[in-house]
Amino acid sequence: MKNKSLVSINDFTREEHIRILDLAHAFEKRPNQRILEDYVVATLFFEPSTRTRLSFESAATRLGARVIGFSDSTSSSVTKGESLRDTILTISNYCDLIVMRHPREGSARFASEVASVPVINAGDGANQHPTQTLLDMYSIRKTQGSLDNLNVAFVGDLKYGRTVHSLVQALCNYKTTFHLVSPPELKLPSSVKISIKQKNLEYSQFTDLQEIIPKVDILYMTRIQKERFSDPLDYEKVKNAYVLRNSMLEGSKPNMKIMHPLPRVNEITTDVDENPQAYYFTQALNGVFVRQALLASILGVVE
Amino acid sequence: MEKEILRKELKVSAIENGTVIDHIPSGSVFQVIKILDLAGYENQLLLATNLDSRKMGKKGIIKVSNKFFKSHEINKIALVAPSATLILIKNYEVIEKKKVEVPNIAENIVKCFNPNCITNSEEISTRFTVIDKKELKLKCHYCEKITAGENVSFR
Image 1: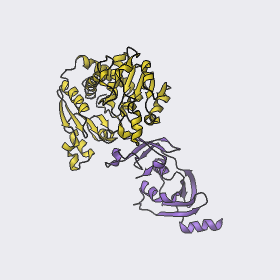
Image 2: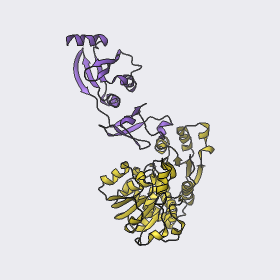
Image 3: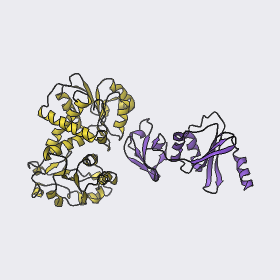
Image 4: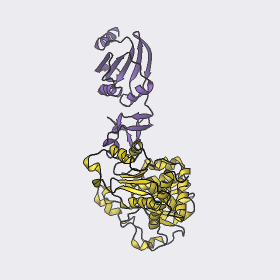
């Protein structure tokens, strides 16, 4: 994976995904190793995403790398009208790897073609966020022991959530049974469903959250955003139907874990946080190990 | 019949050697010229639009002297002129007739339908994988969104 950019989850093979998860496991056991002392990592955040940026910077810093960059475009030359191409060409000279978040779809692919150093996509508009997908896969494997033969429920906004789309596509490489829970307006798009069908995997669609809880190993919650609805009344009708409360978890499988890409607003009530099945904060921590694995293997310091 | 051919020849004279691109939708003639980069062509170039056509109602035609296109060059025009016929001429004789074929990759011809795609804000050549040739479904190499059917427009 040395010098290979990661723009889209499908840029890496199934074997490469597994390799990253195995490496992440090693970093979880020993997170502080100064193996990237000779490297400079640039984090270019053309739109703010504090959580993702700090996770990358924590990963780089724990491995001894130095980090340069900016946290939103107002502090960069973009406000002076510089093209993305010129920004990337210039910053390529200053670093060994670029981590980039940008509001436009396709920006990361373009940057990877222009840059003389590898690029890790930390989110390009509504398109891809592959490190989130890998940390989700890591969290699932860690809590369930395997990625195969699992019942995974996705709940909430399945239409617009890029996190959901990428994870569904990644899990299609394994024997996954999908349970898709959403209001009819926010169903999983057919362009994503086609991946499930191509692999002949089982899936079913629901509108009721409660009925699927006893069936699943992973309950992946997402936020339903008001601005997705053209009619505010439609939002009012569904806004409380996809809120997870602790009382709803009775009868769930003991191994079941609740995941969420965060930030959470109100779709998981805070009384769930105390439940040992709540996994979303540990899931965020796992992101650091996965990003350590990616930095180390793309910079070529581990095989 | 004789008369009709004669009349057509008066409108767009015959070429001795080269390629005739016939049955172009009238509105696409100038796009075809742009795609094939013929605006600065240094040989004889004859073109006509809004000719009567039994097949199409109105059609356009382009005659390019002393030029024989490679198939990957000419197939680019299939996206704007799927009905086009190519006629290769040598010594005023038709030596081959063929249809254009939609290519597997469309490079810098189509505009991405997604307004938030980076190709619509930076100076970048667009690039699409053609995932359905019949219904013309194109997947953007950059934003990964699909531009299809009536949403296909040209740069």
